[in-house]
Amino acid sequence: MDITAVLALAVLVGMLVGLTAYVTIFQKRQPQQMQGPAPDEEDEPVQAGGRRAANRMRGRELRNRRRNEQQQQQQRAAAAAPPGSDDDSGEDDEEEPLNRREQARRDRQEARAAADAARQAKDSKISAYRDKQERKEKEREERERAQAEEVRRAAEERQKADDEEAAKWLSMISVEQTGTVEEEAGTEDSGLLGRFIDYIQSRKMVPIEEAATEFGLRSSEVVDRIQGLESMGRLTGVMDERGKFIYISRHEMEAVAAHIRAKGRISIALLAAQTSDLIDLEARAAPAGTAAGSSKPAIDFNDMVGAADEPVPEHGRSAAAPSCACQKWFVERTGACLR
Image (cartoon, rainbow, N blue to C red; front, top):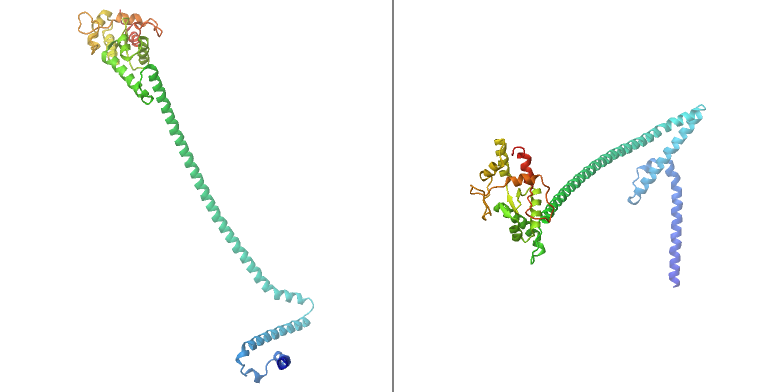
């Protein structure tokens, strides 16, 4: 242990001595390097390990020497120049670097302003395009909403009209029938209405009692249904006092009116005799009575003209009351010519 401590102390002392010698040598060489290397020393080769350090030290020394020379020149020029010229020379020396820095700063500002302007222009174009697209989208949505609303309104109007029409038809014929399901009620009522109209049109002369028995209605209800269909234009004809409804088509009524207008003045008896040629009263079931001298039944125009001036009987009275919408139609077109 004592030998180790002695060796360590000896090594430490040696290191201190070497460091002191190195510092001393460096301090001695520094003034010589500032004065410049001797001509003989410039050409001496530098060892590989210290070439970079030597180059750095030589460059630092050259820069320090130039700076010292410039300071000395400025001091000599300041001492030789008259008073007041120092400021001008200083301004001239500093003017050029300041101008370059100012110009660079201005260039940067202009470039930044140009970039900002370009970015703003691009943003404005994008914003305008988006606004235009939003307006187009809103207009398209408004048009679609308007079209949908129009379609919905038209559908509602059609549905309302269909419902009103169905209610009108269903209110004219009321059938009490058992064993039918609710889903088929509307279809059966519509079919029953068509069958009721076909029944009258095919038989031409229909007794009210037979129609009531056929369709399971009261006589007054049959009269109400016929009058309702007449007011709607589905049936045209004459209700005589014997309780029969005589169906006369619009074409036949126009033929009778044209015949009366062509004759000018015609008696009721002659017109009644000519009805077999103007009105077809052939029915599937044999009618109750016929006109004299004719194979077809004739219409009693005395009853028609006389009943035209009478009020229509109230609902619920006798079904044989002579009342019909077409009676007034004949009076309006031919009453002035009958005698």
